[in-house]
Length: 66
Image (cartoon, rainbow, N blue to C red; front, side):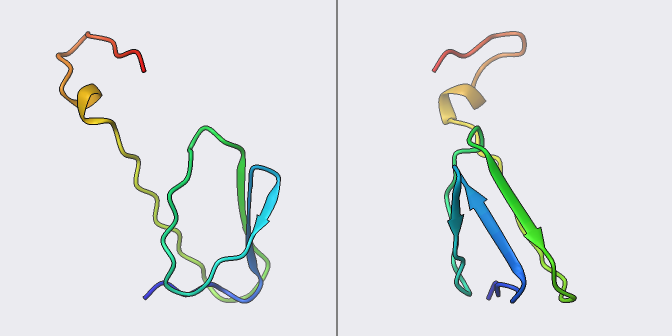
């Protein structure tokens, strides 16, 4: 289960976000975000970059408009 480090934090869209152990978040990757760790414990953040199915099915060289 993911655990939040004591001296770590996260800001998303100019707001401090308080993470709880075991949480999973869905974020807009285009929005301003910042993660930090001022403690001695290591902190691991997993990031999954997802592509809409319609975009993933494009042929090489084709472009996609949202």
